[in-house]
Image (tube, rainbow, N blue to C red; front, top):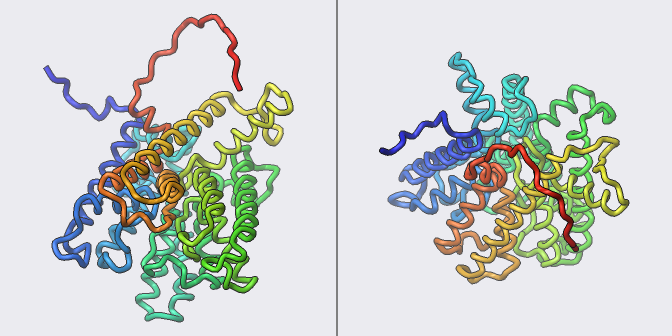
Length: 445
């Protein structure tokens, strides 16, 4: 006799994975409708699935030009999927439940905790309200500032629509655009560059960090260890990325070579920030030198911060590995950061996340090398961009085979939900054993 499916028996990780899958399926159905595209008969299911996954995973990889292929309805569906994917499925579901006056159960709170990467159950509903309020407020400010700039070049209604779309896409680190060539028309435009980068930096540091920075009036000493690590690592990666991009691309005629010194500096800054899962570009990504692409792969793999709208292994995971390496070099047993000792479970989780992520990227890249005709570096770049939910591409996405598109879809989904969450969702946790085996050392390195 077959056992009846009971959603209540599922773990939070399983429900979260299933929830995102349902959103993607619904998005695929909507984008397949004839009203969503200019193509007669509508978009084919695989391409609609690819686009829905890319939007929900706030990635930005596209097989069809968003500006030219989709109608206003199709673009609105993409924008809605971006908002759900960026703020988190459970944030939106909780908001709806609160609006209709329904109580949030303990099981639902556990799922919210998983979705928002929080330590405690206490204060989760308050955090959800805060997330929605902050996100919509920042998006509104961003949309207004972009509207003021765009209205100089286009009609009022169109400028407002473009402002809203790109503000939502930027804050949620999605990278979708409706200009047709990302932001390449605004390479030297300081207003567009600063507004867009500010949106995806704020969206990428995480809502808990935003709240703590605001409440503690930017007093660094009062911040938690998590906030200190997020802000420090984010700043280091941006500065390092800017210097590397400026140095490597300075004389490249396809990117920075023809720009003024001020435009080169602005474009280098954008190149440093956008791999942190944002996905917009102001210079052609396909024109970047191989050395720059390789460095951007590292930035994309690291990604944004926990509890944010971005993907990747996360800044704090990268920071934990750096702290472990430093402790080994100086011969310390305890792993310390900012005069605080790290919990061993956080260290184990960080190592597990990096190992799983590297394994996923390598396997996908290997399979893409079998199914596709592109160069290895371009395929590796595509795989890491999908995992990190970045959306940058050297231009090969539209030419991927059906198998290649399926591989990227799976990678984007894994990147959004989180590799560790998916592994936990698939695996059955075993009860802790009440015994320990004898310890024995091995040679490593």
